[in-house]
Image (cartoon, rainbow, N blue to C red; front, side, top):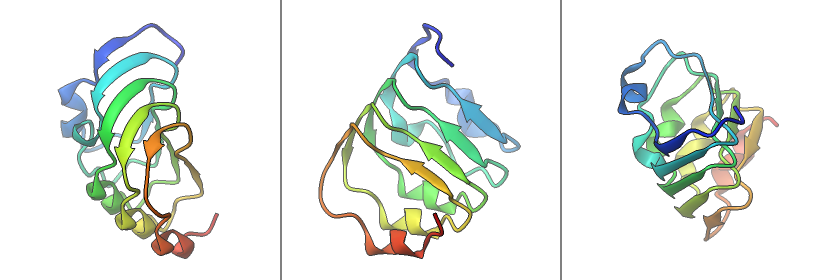
Amino acid sequence: NGNNFTGPLPDCLRNCSELFRVRLERNHFSGDISKAFGVHPSLNFIDLSDNELSGVISPEWGECKNLTYLHIAENRILGEIPVELGRMVQLRDLSLSSNELKGHIPAELGNLSF
């Protein structure tokens, strides 16, 4: 974290099926965040905050059942918060602030135990 990495997130991250933790915050990554990750059963921590990522939050992220920490604040993420995020039953820390999100906060997020 806190380096000067630039450009899109590497495509190879989509294929890391045993990936457990991703900390790439405070860089200059850009590109579509919805294409950055696939569904990783082992993934429990994502911090991509304070970058220049755009696009929408992928509903597929709702399938990351072991995810406990998701910080994607301070980017250029668009659109609505997917209702599928309410399926991340282990999620304990969610930060989506300082983006360009719109719409309503899905009622399904009320299923989470913060």
